[in-house]
Image 1 (cartoon, rainbow, N blue to C red):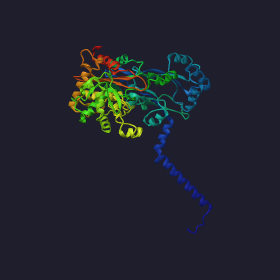
Image 2: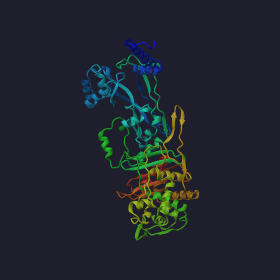
Image 3: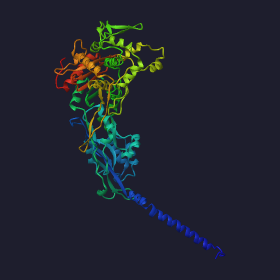
Image 4: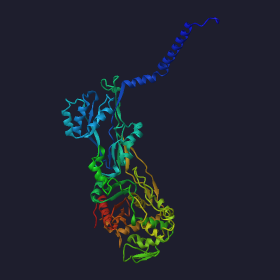
Length: 585
């Protein structure tokens, strides 16, 4: 046997045997080991998922009045299976839809392999155009008009934000979460912050297709899935108050107004002027409108409530006063200055806003009459870095934990900052005289200012400001705890400040008398912040009622002049609406 000579036929047999073994192993692997995988792959080749959009959740005010809704919209689609002449179709659609013919052809060619579902050509066409297209269906049977929905904003408010078509960058990040490249997504404001709740879950139909990808028959209802609507979002905003605040503020100016519940931190109204129409951003913004808003020097796209910082002026004097008391730099009853219209310091004269002077001033009198000379004297006693640390402890510089993604930090200088920017010999203690007044390099957002005053009104506990009341999940409330923190001020000093704020509006020589209401006692502080680029900025912060605080508010008007003038008067009008009363002045 072992002496058998190896023949050519034996070699052929071995080769055939090896080939059969390889074939057997391959078939075993294909059918047994990976059978389910290829079966699934083949099944996918013969079916297609056609996604069905989910209605976006509605945004309501605290009384369930809609602020944002979904309204019917008409979309123009093309069924590629029925296109007879692409160039002719593109020319026709271009004339009707005011789109470039080349753009339409690019859409058709880009989606040329999608033959199981219509291709979107244009969003939100008007009824007249839709009718004209329908009238030509016989000549262009591939055109389909679909009734869809689009976002409609009933309130033009920065905090709501807007939705827009998803960008390529967003799509790359979000596609694993079920987004498609033609979807709409929250771009700004609450629409963006609560996107995961508002967007809902898409449904789909399962279609059987042939080898060319063409749909065969009706969807398989057994394997289809209905879309799930997005969750509704209910806010703390009072729609009626929000509307009245808008009407009260001078909409031709750059200004801000915020009203906040001091017990909960819920924002009842917030307006930033000038504003913009978010409906313009939903589909495709007109170039004329875009150029008009981006070239407006008053920056309508900017939410000045939390995205802009300003010198706070005299509304900052309470922070300075609290630092002085908590650091034992002064005694509140001490007559610190006999104001004669200003003080001499370092060879310079620093003037008080009242040229004839206020006379002898202790802390309460200085707050009531907003005496600059008194605070200049405090500046002589402060240690800058210690003061900086105290300002930070009050959370005045960090963005408030509000439920908006876009927030700007405040600023307060340190010794290191001054050395870096002016060198050690380039600045003096005289710079401090500006800082204690809320001038110079101090910059705060209107939101951080009203949050501080809301904390004083709530006995030192700051409820973090927010817009969300709850999310409605099919009748189940999803609530969020935004948290709270304590101001570094003793209860004794808080009571002292509340009394001073009371007399700053209702007492003798009060600077905030223009905010007085009939039957409701308001406490408040004026602020007039010097502005190197124009007239003085006007501030007024208020707590009401001062003897049992419910709300805090701030009004800020760029280049508005004295805080005791326009800002105090506007505050009175706004709070008169809230308390259902009327102003005295």
